[in-house]
Image (cartoon, rainbow, N blue to C red; front, top):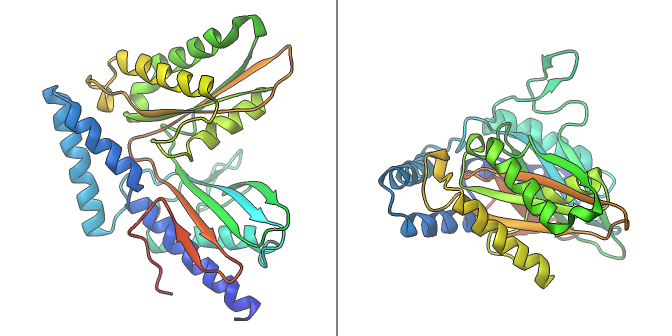
Amino acid sequence: MTKQERIQRMTDIMVSFIGYTAVHLPDDIISKLGELKAAEDDPAALSIYDMMFENMRLASELGRPSCQDTGFVQYRIECGSRFPLINELEEILRSAVIKATADTPLRPNVVETFDEVNTGSNTGTGAPSVSWKIIPDHDGCEIYTYLAGGGCSLPGHATVLMPGEGYEGVVRFVLDRLAEYGQNACPPLLVGVGIANSVDTAAQLSKEALFRSVYSQNPNPKAAEMERLLEDGINAMGIGPQGMGGKASVLGVNIQNAARHTATLGVGFSTGCWTHRRGHIVFDRDINYVTDTHSGFTCNK
């Protein structure tokens, strides 16, 4: 396979994958929604869960996006330094967004700031957004995709607490943010919390937390315990599916953490809505792929 053929193959796969994730929710999200529905006894909440599953059924049957807000495309890349298309990767991913916008179709959401002009392609200055991690002496490439909605993931929050506020301050910050607008973000939510050194690192980690499975745990036992306590606390608020009340307000709480300065305690907060359009696809050097988020995905090109 020539280099140009590899570029075309990877572009075609990413076009299909972006479109697929717009239509089909990840396997773990579907499973978790089923568990929450089975545990619910509030009639209004059960009716909303029924509508959610009907929405998923129709989206799949009709091949249409699961939400009218098809989001702002965000990528997180963990790429080997020896991956053969590392230099072309950002242009491949940009081209895939343009093609997926036309093919799926995705709603054009990207507007150039100050010019107030919709680009019509979901691309623009800094769009799609891409964050990188280079893996030395590796020839594969992992790509996390996320269709970040305007009412859920994009309106995140971050701050730096005084260290004396401690982890109780982190909990207070998260619960206060949920109380302010959680019902507007289409719950049950996947909540991402970043705890780190500064506003920028904490915010980035909170977004990375949304790429984890709802069944995952932070490897640090203390952080995992905070995930559990936050989940219990948010559910006790009674927001429920679509903010109409019920037992479950969250799909889960994921915490990502990093080392910090002794005098700072940065905390970031991001949410994913119930129609949590994330994907994870892994390529080898020959542009063969596997995905662990969508068992039904195949690209025949």
